[in-house]
Image 1: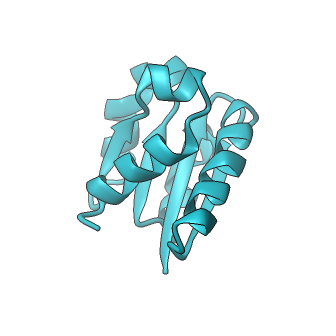
Image 2: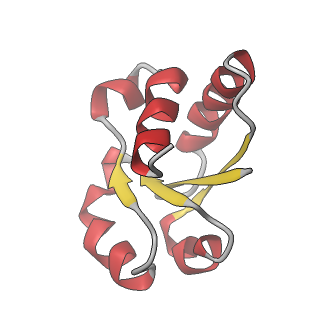
Image 3: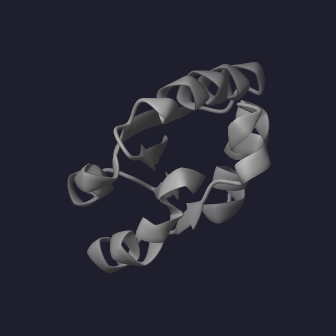
Amino acid sequence: MKNIVLLCAQGMSTGMLMNKMCSAAKASNYECTISATSVSQAKSAAETADCILIGPQVRYELENVRKQCPNLPIEVIDMVAYGRLDGAKVLAAARKLMGD
């Protein structure tokens, strides 16, 4: 089972997106865990993550997170998908990032 971690400033705004992604995963019978936390917790979250997606509002942290988690695929969430809380689109992006 894959573990997808969403990061944002406080882990709150990605919480709503996380719920939409969980619904999309369930609808497509894709077994995974999705969690949301603050970007300051990136290193500890990476211990069990298969990929990390960063909220567009903290995209400036991308290189910092990549340095902390050098062995993980990490990308910034598409701003439009994030704004629309398009869980299916963001889940698809995570799956592509993991080579799923």
